[in-house]
Image (cartoon, rainbow, N blue to C red; front, side, top):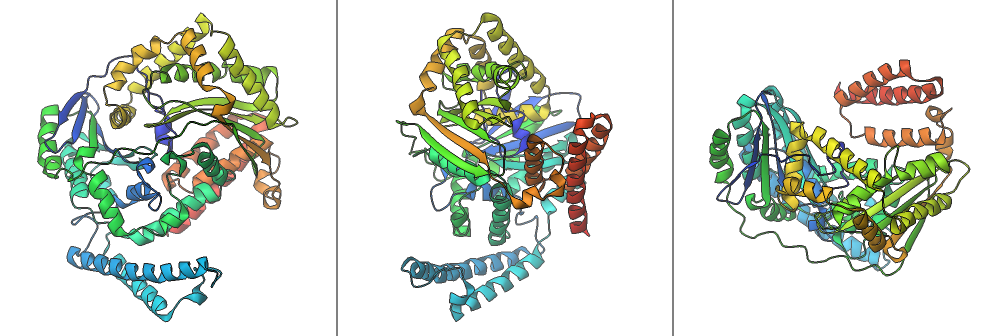
Length: 578
């Protein structure tokens, strides 16, 4: 019953793990500890293939935060065979870059110490650099240029594409990093070779420049969004001692500091086969797949040292925490309670409790949006992470109303759950909806593959078959009990957002004529478009064109703004390809 806060949209669609039927999984454990999960399905001449590393930001520590996410980038940079014109010269340049970078780091450390003592104002100011520092920077730039000339850009992806592969992607969360692709059934051996090669002979090309890419990703996803920095601050406020307190993308200072050796050490432990699970779903012969797994993945040596268990856990919260922020967003309240980790016996009741609150006929919408008309939207989510968990409710205030009004109304709904058992009909309805959604999702090879991997990295893939009876066994008394256990004032952290006026936003012609809710949605979409690919923008634009014709008059301004936003981004991407 895994629920996560995904950092990429595909995982959002499989955020719950409740199933309406048993999944026939064949499991093979290789001698080196890697697990292979197989679900053969005849008919579709394709195979969805993926693997997951049981490592995410929760496994990091201060000084290397964000390194798990950086690996997501590094694993596409190629191997000794893929991605280079001359591997010997390539490795020689990488070694020299590391040596020069170490010397640069020493120069930086001296300047940081001077700044700490007040001798200089900013260690990053070029004016305070020594001649030696400048010479090292020049040599480093020259080495990067030489190394770049040896790179065969995007060769890993091109090999897949030229052989009929599609949807190559990856993602990092607090708890894991996952990689996947769709390949034709007759190219399964190619997948085994490519994936085993990048696990056995990775070359972290463009390591130092890729840190700059992650900086830019952080800027676009966090720093440049209306609430991105505040959400980070809210996480850090909510988690007092747990490593879930830092962002998956990492703190800016850490992105500047870790070295390729840090990455190699991290890789040796966390990307060893005994910390990985791979999964195949589609039209293939399990016996043949097992042979290929042993031939290719089986040659990767087991890790010398197993990953360390998580040591620092969250301390019990003793008093309510509150944060007030002013941002270019609609007035909103976010209420978060400490709850339970994935698979805890209370998670099943908490999960169904969210279904009672959510949806068009859910209690939050009926009460806050329709009956009281004080909120534009309201929703709840239960997030059982691997080691900790939380339950969150948020509501966007309607113009003329305040976040505090919405907050009080939310507490009233939670109070009802604490005092009055959920009716039998209402409870059965959400159970049926849960089962129906799970059944529809299991039909997709892709989402089945993801669900199996997500389950295995936490409690084992068997959870997808053992959780359903536990969901169906939840009673009204269980829901009332968990509501009383976790929804207490001293166990919550609250964020109140007020609208901060922005001259730039007020003068943005794209937002003219839009409602506050539509403006917030346009800003949110704009921030996400920076990560979208050309074909995704083209598909979205085509969809907007189709929907605009049927949109009611009061939605035409919003559709025009959407179209203009997509067209502008499309021009940027097309211009970049010339």
